[in-house]
Image 1 (tube, helix red, strand yellow):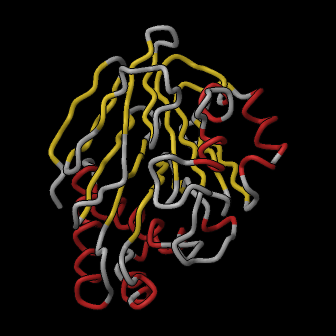
Image 2 (image 1 turned 180 degrees about the horizontal axis):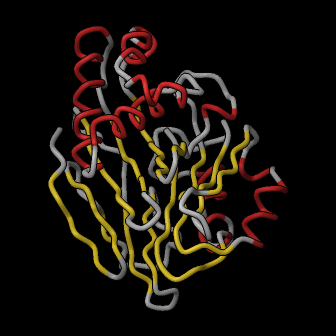
Length: 256
């Protein structure tokens, strides 16, 4: 399973989430505490928003802890909205196109979890992607299909789009794949709002936590808390989606 972290608020250096905290995303790439696998070494990625509607995107196949370019970028780039991810593959190849986050136009998306037996019905899943979005199908992951189906179904409501895409892929898994049919924690953004969702077809839903920092004036949304001595992290419950806008967070039901 992967680990991810996102931030929305006043601009901060990306390193303040990715590499500086005691349990930063880089630390989690070597020693995750709440994941099926402690090591997440099958690539990494960062999507950040700045002066243009589309996010910048940097992804590579190296372990996050060993890539000097990631550390250099995180030390220099400031952003008020970014998504970062370290990957542990559930079966697909280690390649840049399979690294998260994924981006299409103003949208960015990252996922932790799996769609059971995806390799058995990958062609069927790919055929569900709308023609106008299929050019963005660059890799081979279930996560990228989830994202493209979300964009195709969402219109002005990305939560409804994600619910529809989860429904479609979970249905294919039940018909042609295996268990667990769907495990999902996901974060996604349009450059202004940040969403995070948690869901599972069984009792094991990948973890999501969030926290408002008065010092940074921003939200951190993560797979695992970034510091062990910060006790005010809130767990997003399974079957919920959080919508972060400014200083506000709305918790909504998520029941695909």
